[in-house]
Image 1 (spheres, one colour):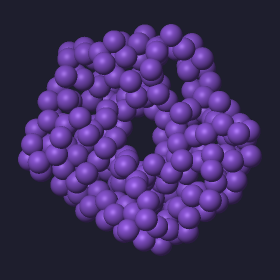
Image 2: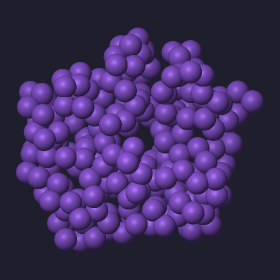
Image 3: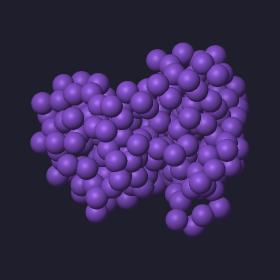
Image 4: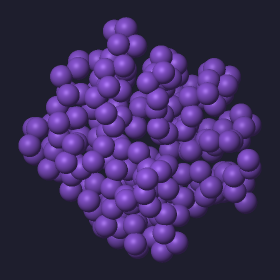
Amino acid sequence: MGIKENYEKIREEIEKACAKVRRKPEEVKVLAATKTRNLEEIKEAYKAGIRLFGENRVQEAREKIPNLRELQGAQWHMIGHLQRNKVKYAVELFNAIETVDRKSLVEEIEKRLKGKEIEVLIEVKLSFEESKHGCRPEEVKELAEYILERPNLKLKGLMTVPPFYEDAELVRPFFIRLREIKEKLEEELKVKLPELSMGMSHDFKVAVEEGATIVRIGTALFGPRKY
């Protein structure tokens, strides 16, 4: 199956998951995770109807995004861990940074924006794995307040990367937890946070059932990764 057919299948699965919990399918955006994918594959995903794309590494994004300017209306999200020394490039390349997890990063983004605005999500670490990034649940409120003090950073919601389990049901508690953190934050800070970025190729249906508004899909869209 090609990218177009894969995308149609993903949208069907989203519709089914939404129907199960009485959500509207249009509330869920598919972000094409384009790590290791070439320009032709990305253009094909765009032709299939995708408008939201994500890169994990700034270096890779610098090689691709400038060569895809003809994709009108395409939005690019930074979905990998962002180092401070790469922020100057990130704010030029991306429409949103989904992996804000510390105050020092907020300061660097603010400094590099030079009056521009950028959307951000707070990455929350809910997993026990050392390799995962994000701020701890108990730090989210303080970080959110810190971001909200900065007029050029638009806080849109939360994201997480849970542990990988073959059985997607085992991931459900992580998605529930992120949604609960978001709801509590909205209540305490009196803000609206429309985005929950959670769920990938193997577990996005469960994520949608638990409130995901952005699902980050690579393999299910493009096929196995070629390194």
